[in-house]
Length: 190
Image (cartoon, rainbow, N blue to C red):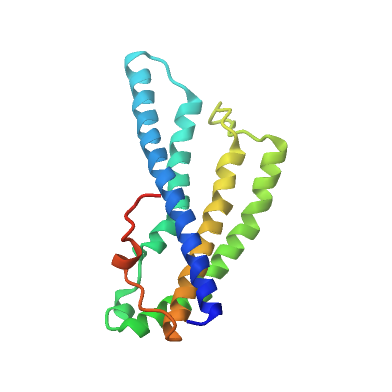
């Protein structure tokens, strides 16, 4: 294996590790969200006390989980593919399909999403914007959710780079075919 491929594959492993650890943390966040939802329902129905901030946070937790778990989903090869194309392809065909999809769709989408959302996050953070509006009296900071959007697309883009480097190394004969069983042998621990 040449030095360039070895370095790219080491970087891919580091990206995998970061995204796996983030996914592990998000799982705990989902548990916290379930507890928050149950607690809010309990206090509203049995105690007659409702918190607009607690209610406002619930969909934000879920949206953050979706954004932050996208990279892990790609890493585990559990993303959606068009079966008409991928079902009849061999390993090399799948590597080409993945590489083209990453380079033509995924990475440009991630770049545009970060480019569009990062300034919104920065402005919201600088101004201390909250979620308060006519529909909600919540004081939940808006910059937290606005920050999850570029963070989610940055991690997804980084995972796309990792997957593209694996595809290129495989197509060049410098690495074996990536199979999910090999990738996840470490388990789902961070």
